[in-house]
Amino acid sequence: MSLGKLAKFSRLCCSCGVTRQFHTNSNPLLFYTTPNLSAEPMKRRKKVDLSKVIQSTQLKIRKMEREMRKREEKFGRTLKPVEEITGNIAIRRNRDKLRREFEPLAVEEIERRALLVKEWGHYKNQQYHTEYKALQKAINAQTKALNELRMESEELYQKAKQIHEGDIVYQFNGPTETPPPDDFDSPDGQYIDTTRKW
Image 1: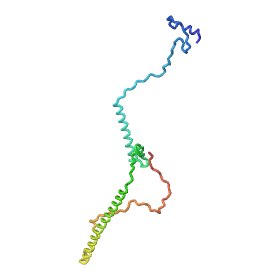
Image 2 (image 1 turned 180 degrees about the horizontal axis):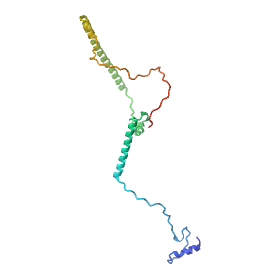
Image 3 (image 1 turned 90 degrees about the vertical axis):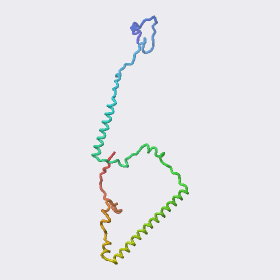
Image 4 (image 1 turned 45 degrees about the horizontal axis):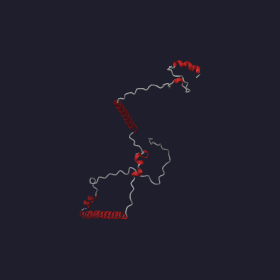
């Protein structure tokens, strides 16, 4: 700014008996400017009604449930495949902490368990032999009775040999699913993958 312009502005200043001084800053004669406030005024916050918020969340939940029901009716209740299940992430993170480390068994404990298995084997063997003897005894008694009946009357013997349909109810339809034979060559062909993408 030139000195001539400063002289024109000098009448704006209050003369209070103070000598005039020249300042070398950008705003001479203590003219301070403020940055223009071009921002928008702050908007008033709307008062939120809690009952309306709860009502809107309930409506959203109902809408989601309706969509899920429609999807179930359309596709059926199909479960996610096991390969695509991620599982609980917290358990996977703490897998090392949750794993139990078993201490090696003592020699006495190993021997005790081996003896227990042997005793169990002896017990089951004796049980099988007693059942087998009882069955053989019943069969021998039956054959002896049939032979004596045959000596008495052939007609009664033939009637006794017949199977009574009412005593034993047995139905057999055959296997529904059988494993494929080992020497079966499956034909090559195209197939459509119907696995759903999750």
